[in-house]
Amino acid sequence: MKVAFAGSFAVRLLDAVRPLLSVPCSLLVEEDETAILPRLADVDVLVSMGFTAAMAAAAPRLRLVQVPGAGLDRIARDVLGPRTRLANVHGHETAIAEYIMGAMLALSRSFAAVDGALRRGEWRSQWAVGAAVPALWPELAGRTLGILGFGHIGTALARRALAFDMEVCAVRSRAAAAVPEGLQFLGGPDRLDELLARSDHVAVTLPLSPATRNLLDARRLALMKPGAYLVNVARGEVVDEVALYRALTSGRLAGAAIDVWYRYPVSAEPTPPANRPFHELPNVLMTPHVSGWTDGMMRARAGLIAANIARTAHGEAPLNEIAPAP
Image (cartoon, rainbow, N blue to C red; front, side):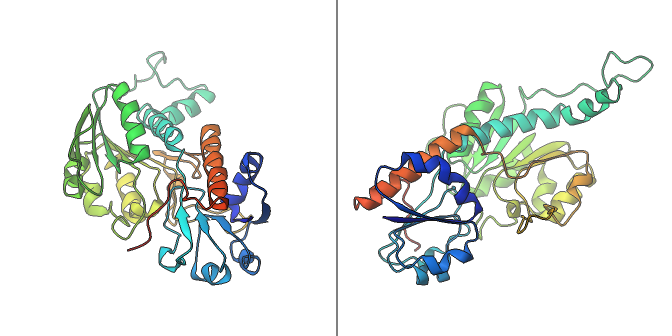
């Protein structure tokens, strides 16, 4: 078996996958996805976040494209050969659900602002002397969380939000026949506007597709409650960048936690993550696409990737197989 790990994200999983391999493998490693092309001629499994027509042409023996993440937005599914299967991995739902809960607390309780002030000796609290007492911070209990996308992440998040005594509603690509216990509703796309209007916090957890690109545009952001919070852990392009920046600068939204961005590094040089200066806004929590980067995620993904390499060697279908493009 010859297995290629291509792209920086895939390469970072290799050390966790290697000790779990149960079949003899020759491993190729290349952080540059384009540089792997001349080496794909006899590769059986490609572990990569991206798959292009050039890769398909260069890899006639390819039996499995193993995406080391959940998103398929960089996979050209229509160029997969008839012998090539496609699979992705999950295992990040606990990590991301915990991140969202932490982000909602950090934003609504102004942790960054009060931490920075206290480091300067400024007490933004009821203990201050000769200063106004700050407004009471809201609790999560009793507030409504709207979840856009109700797959692995949305389901894990709903359980945690309900444990915080939040009201939870969700939408996904198709309405559910039965609503999970505790949810106010689990609707289809036709209920998105309703979800936005009633939610105090909105978490974006759905995949990027032509249908979801700029799904939250200026009109939909304007439907959100004044003073609501947005957390995006899906893909930056699901939320219109300009509309989001304006909603935050105008005060229409009280704040946002953004873990997924509009620009990503292509070199070691410093890379601003957006075209608008979100870094100047005090009501934005910025993280560099790390919401799922935890030890639990690594164990789960490495185990599944190693298992799928073995299954391919034995002629078996991979776990988490993705159906061919229609």
